[in-house]
Image (cartoon, rainbow, N blue to C red; front, side, top):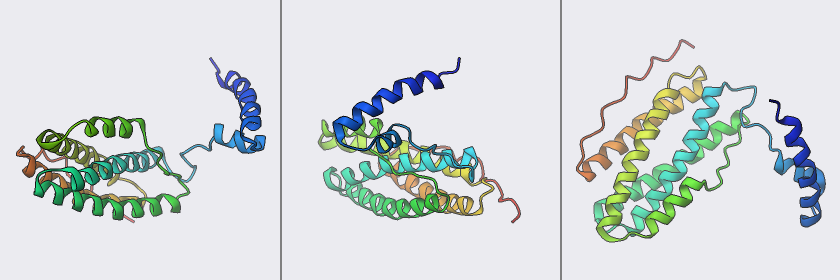
Length: 198
């Protein structure tokens, strides 16, 4: 079933209503309701998915790291949170530049996942908060390790180099968080693929 005509029929009245309510010209409203596709013709789907995943998980990690650095009761967890947050700032800038060079928009609006996580953590304090923060950091670093490991096989040299560099940093973060949490280091991922010849 082709849903495009139906979706278009719904969008036209929505544009008119929003235009009258906001005072924006109809073309401007239409642009908001019908954003440009995230995946450009200059990138393959795997690279686009990597940039999106990296941006989303990086947003979550910075949220948790900031809380750990300011709200954790354990000094070591505060220090870990501070280190992760500072590392995240650097990663965010590099990731944004990498995406901008490929005309790939990764402006991240707080996701529902981030909002839900913030609410859950806000209800905790003391050792319960510390435990949840560490669990979340370990889980996120595992997700990020997997994303960077997969991207290390990219045919785009800059994405591959970025992924290789960040993979090493994320693995180090994961090791520190696992030790602090008192849990075994997760089983290492498969070896990173050898980069294709340039």
